[in-house]
Every structure is written in C-alpha cells, then in structure tokens.
Length: 502
Image (tube, rainbow, N blue to C red):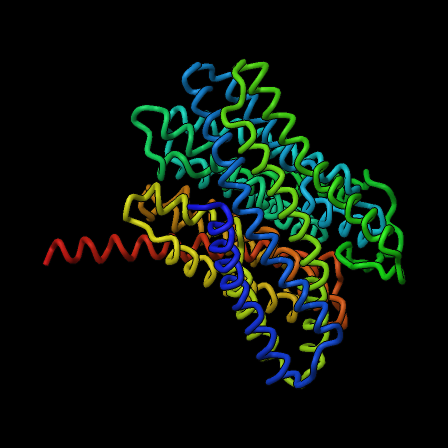
C-alpha cells in the first residue's frame, strides 16, 4: 500500500476511535450539564491534533519500533546468551521508563501534593529499576517456557500483603505508578521483544509465552513504591511535609500572546524534549545493535523514518491532550459534582472509561498483535470491547470510593484477590494476554482524563484528601480489564466443553 494512502487509512481509523469520547462529552454537556464548556474550539482542536498524533505514531511503530524490536530479540535468541538477553531486557526496561512523560507527570503531582515528602525523582528511579529488573525476569520466563500463572499469583499475593501494611497516602500512588509505566512507546517495544523471543525459540507459543512482559512491568513497581511509602511515612525518613499543594502537572500555563518566532522556538524545544524522552531507548538499541550483535540496522532509512514519526506523533499527541483531554477531565469533574444528583458522576465515569479505552493506541496495537498470535482464537475488536468494559466498571468503582471516602486498601486487596482466583481457573493461553491488557489500558489517552477526573473529584468533595483519594483510579482501570478478559475466556471454554459433551 502507498505510504500516503496507508496514513490516510490510519488517520480515518484514529478519528473513528476518538468519536466515542466526543459523543460522551457532547451528550453530558448538552443533555445533563446543559451548557457549552469554555474553550470549546480549543478542546475540539486538541482532539483533532490527538487523532493526527495517533496516526503518525502508529505508522512509526510499524516502520521502526516493531521491526527493530523483533530483529534484536531474534538475533539474541540465535546467540543463545541468557546473560546478554537479561542485560538487554534490563537496559530496555529502565531506559523506556525513566524518561516516561506520564510517570514524570504522576511523580511531580505526588511531590507537589505531598508537600515534598515524596521525592519525585526517587519515585521515578525506583519504578524504572523495578521495570528493568522485571523485563529481565520476563525474558528468562519466555526462554524457559514457564507458565505465567505462578508468577502472577505469587506476585500479586505479595502486592496485596504489602498493601495491607502500606500507609493510605502511598497506596493509590503506588498502583498508579505501576500503571503509567506502560505507555504507547514502552508497550509495543516490550511486547515486540517478548513476541520476537517466543517466535524464534522452538516449542514456544507466541500467545502463551510472548505476552506477559507488560504484566510483570506493571506489578513490581507497585511493591517497591509501597515499600518506599512505608519507609517515608511509617519511619519518617522522607523530608518533612509542608502544606499540600493541589497543583496539576497537566495544567497548561497561560503565558499570554507570543510572536510567531516564540511559538516556533517553543515547538522546537518541545520536540527536542520529546526526543529526550525517546533518546534513552534509541541509545540502548544502538548500543546492543552495534556493540553486541555487531550488525548494521537493516533498512536504516525506514527505521529512522519510523522513529521520527513516533517522536512527531507523540509530540502532536501531547499537545492535543493539553488542549483537549486535560481541560475536559478537570471541568467535567467540577461541573458534575455541582449537580443535584451523583448518578451522573457514575454514568460519566463509566462512559468516559469505555470511550477513552476504545481510543487507546497501545491497546489497538496489542489487540492486533494478539489477533495475529491467536491464529483465529481471538479478535482484536472483541478484545478492545472486553477491555473497555473492564475499564468502565473499574473507573466507576474507583469514583464510588472517592465519593464515599472508603479506604482504598480494601478495594485494591479485594480486586486483586478476585484476579488471583480467576488466574487459577482461567485457560493458560489467556493469562499473559489478560494481564498485559490490564497494563496497556493505562496509557496516554486514559491516564490524563482519569487522573484529572480523580484529582478533580477529590478537590471538589469536602473532606477528601487529594493525595489519599485523588490517586488510585488508574489502579482500578488496570484491575477490571484483567477480570473481564479472563471471565470471557473461562466462559468460552465452558461453552466449548458443554457443546462437545452434548
């Protein structure tokens, strides 16, 4: 297919994916709130830029990131060096997360809201180290052919145990920190590494052994960040807390009129910043390509073009978020809380959870790869609907917790107890994919709206603590898709056995 025709096809697909968000916001604004939001044109323009950014990004993935990820994993598998693969996995995981924009945003919000007691940079390093270690562990699992069942059951038993002892101020943040590690750059690259390894090793199945790296990358940061919180809050080893400042890192500063040159310089600076976000990943790939494999990159111009499209697409995406999705989340939370009934808050939470997930580029990419790996057993469209329903239910439950002021401990522990039980009964082929899908829901579309909604609700409801109650919605958005996907697989297997018995 001609590149321009292919891009127009992807762009049209991106517009279709964003339409549910537009419909949900329009219905609630016109039928429920009954007023036109301030800055409507800016929001509409932001959503248009988001669609273009997603299209550029997805095309860049196909041209650059997916091919090079698979190629590297194939070459390492041929060399048969477990140590080399583990080092590559660690470096890739660390580099992809340390400069992750969503993690930087969450860490800076936590530092601001905690009055400096939680150190943002320490938080980022802990999360990046844990993701690096867990990708190395996931590589070993794929090579040895271990079932992911026991990894996830034992891992989440540990997560739930630590949660029982963790202070309330850190629990929501810890689970959110695990969720935001899986972004639209990290997920495809880590998934390509796992699938590439599974395909190149005899006796491994792409669906059972190729998926699961993302799931592990979500789980381990939850443990480390909660342990960090225990040290800071229980033993008082962090800096003294000042007056909590409720300042969203996602807010867009109004700098007043600017000249064309200033606008161009700002765009150039932002693009360079975006390059800085992707640079650690590029450095790791180049180092292992030339120092370890000692081969030039195949189709270098095509791969370079792919990375450029990823950077430009990511930049357009972030600009669109600031203009469109961030203001929507903040304003809708304040407006809905001001209504006479809370029913509309729950309806909006469910609807926007479903709509943002259907538009999530990382989920689209992983859904397509799962359909390929499943060889007819799974449909990408069905996967996305199941995950979107899970996110919708999860965010609704999380919003209920904020409204009632209940402790997040029992909600999280109960949710993961259900996940552990389903993992025991679910067919083995679906477990790695289900946990990966729980991770990819919390990416660049969902995180901004959900975070803005949670902090907006905690700010506008009297008696709520922003640090304790504002964070945690991302955690609920991660738990329930795992539940819906595994319940679906259990149901399909049950009907299959019933049909065979008849």
